[in-house]
Length: 342
Image (cartoon, rainbow, N blue to C red):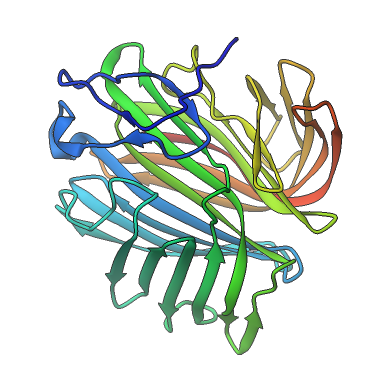
């Protein structure tokens, strides 16, 4: 499959609500205009999802800021590899109707914030910096406080895709994954332990999504980031929803450069058994070793969600575009199978 690469800024939607072009880009070239979407506000889905990974400290902290139109969903989760537990706090704000401040582009300076009795978030982009602030004094069993700045320089490549659904071409998925952003300064405090983030230890993953989805979908997604001989590396792998016949979101990142992969497949017998992940061109061969399950089931009639996100480590190998083979050893990340009716 020859995937179409978008090489310049491109208006995402035509006047009839269908995609101008389907493809992938190494920069956030797709220009998203919410007013062109041919659907009510409750059919539009928007989110920013951040994950701070620190293999040296044995934890991942995940932060979700989403606006589904009929409600905003906000979540803070700590995945502790030592205790093998995932602890989450979440809250819902009804009828947000896309007034939460989520930006139309991941490439523009912007600040979004949310506050509740459970926790507060503040996420800012200012030039090449992303500032993450979390205040969760009531998080159980230990309060969480984060004030950390990560680097996303202009020359860092990300994976951006625009795809639609075969059954409804006015339904679309616009997404950017920024993998293995490295820290500049700050700290993560969990309980009484305050860890200064280290430039060669911590990484940040951003999942930036906008779109008009169909009602029911199941997807598979895996992402990981860390270091290879002090070089930041990571990958994004996913499939299962929208029409991927023209393009995939599969990519490996080495020293801020994207190496495009084709189709992938996840194979596993149960969530906590080893997963095998391979591509169709013989470039990717990974074994995912589960450590911590993060599983939740929601059934609220209008929202049905079965989320099986498993955190662990990846081993294996990947070939770069130039044919060089990179060995992956205990790369921290996650793999998931999710069903949503929303």
